[in-house]
Length: 383
Image (cartoon, rainbow, N blue to C red; front, side, top):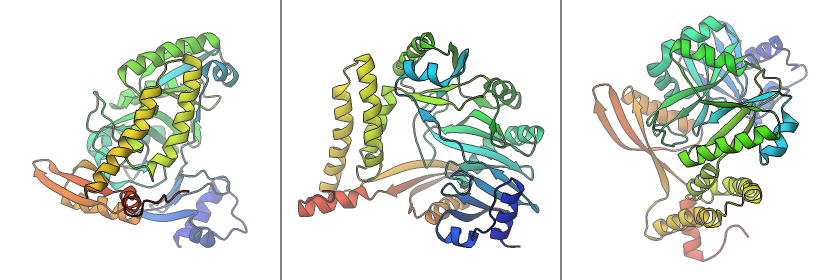
């Protein structure tokens, strides 16, 4: 039986109706893609399809299938004093720290753990790094919880190919659990804080429990101000019983910092980063009057000008990151994985150590070519 036939069977088992649907055609339209890692074949959904969320992964192993559902998007709060009383049923709201890294769901199959990115792909690097750090704990916990369970957490630190921010408690690579799921159901926050530490796993910080009203919004403001001083990302607000979906709220430190990072590559991240973060700051400014005008403007202009300077001097526009790997073969695995996504990486340097290798990768960015064209022609490619 081929992967498409297996997919139809797996979806039918969880009540997804594919009768009359040409799954081969859906694959050709890039609704989902077929992947393989080790002995696992899997299908990752690039878009929502027949009730299956974007980012879902259908995994086939040992003659069985299972679904790791796409992580549900979390709505963003712009005005906490308005949103909290209207959204949460009460009487209280759990405030958890939102960490700045990349979302990874972990499932277990055949006694091994596998790490799934937000896009529904099994990431070889993240999988192997988590196996070395927390493989036994994650596998034991998921085996004990049962086959329908999987974990969602944030990978943070400087050693990853995706999102790099320094955290004092985990400067290189760390995994912090923020949700445990049973199928599509998110367990209550108190269950996560009870279960995960029993297996040696770290969780995101619980910052407090506030009232589900305007008084709670005032308490939240104090929590966020403290996070601003610490240079942290923000908060996720959750109902203690998981009766409604969570909400998120980020600090100005993060909004402006993200702009500064994104505008290094103005023709890529710059476009998607710009409006949403300016909008967040506009409502924060309206409510708080913090007068962050100069910070916001410099975060937009300075990194873009630095990239223009680099290109004008004949230098490239790229990002570099360093990874700790189990061996040289894992370097090839990383290159192959990203090449399959249309991302070309260059290996800058590989150093061997007692525990494996450390490799520096370079990812060229297309903003360099766009800036070069402007410098040659003097014309705008946009309008």
